[in-house]
Image (cartoon, rainbow, N blue to C red; front, side, top):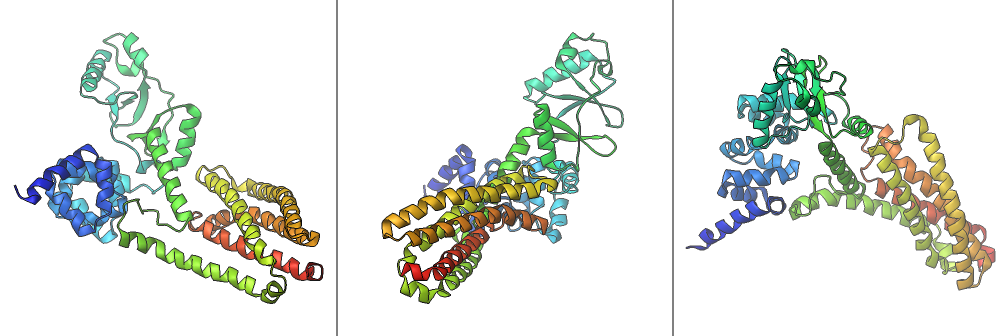
Length: 436
């Protein structure tokens, strides 16, 4: 057997046993090679790994793979996964690829794509159980048994009328206690919680959490049943959004993965490194303003990183709290001022306590009380403004319609470095006669 014939069974076994890791490995390959690997696999194995790829990469691969392979893979994905993939395709290609789908799947994906990106409609599942209200209890029980034998999920069972409008929900206890010849409309519960397809998914998550539900029916404006949205999908969505925000905070593309290719990662990271380089030179320029002072009082150089570093850490604490608050909708507009006041007050308290300790250490180390005072005051000023900056930067970006996670950390570091250096060296100039 040749070398290629030996490797192929190993690759297939890898994709079968660990499709998640296989997808990560694909992400580390150039697109052309990734497509070649997918073409050598049985479609069932390629389809197992494909949903684990980062969506932008999956969309890129779709555009260069044979159409027949695309059709085979997409028909093995859920409509929700397919809609997510299509949302990342260029507008000029979206219509073409939709036409390649079977009519039922095309209709489902098209319906999902009509909803806004952050709405419940984008993550609804069409995998649910619903019966028409004129069915008898004995018929429904038999159908549920059949579905259970096939592994169908039947935790919630919905009731619809002849126009597919949601009429009620069946409680399993009521179903089992009812008379076999009764229709399910006689025992269904009519007071049920529903979600409009256009409702913001985070509001849906809050409502499900309050009620203790793990799923809710999604309806349109005429109360027609479209699908269900499950708590697990909402949790996964929030986790993905949070992980993307963490990456963007530090200047990494939201769609980069651990095994993304080196050129892809470089393209995502390098521009922000240049931004960071520019901000570093800005901080250096602030220090350069006081070059003569540092030349006369060289001991100042020792404490520059101490003041700036503490400011950066304090600001990062505020930034972490406000980013979580934004994602979880915990900071309403009418309480923004209260939140900013709280973070600034925390900066003042922390600045007083940390500044006092720093002042004592500087005094004991260098032997000059005035140097301790200068360092302590600079620490106080920097921590107060660091708390304010860490809280206000993402809120300001959001108010301007920008992504609050996009490089907030780089902006914060620039502010705390520049302000820390300016406060410390400015105070040193004022009190230089006592520091010489």
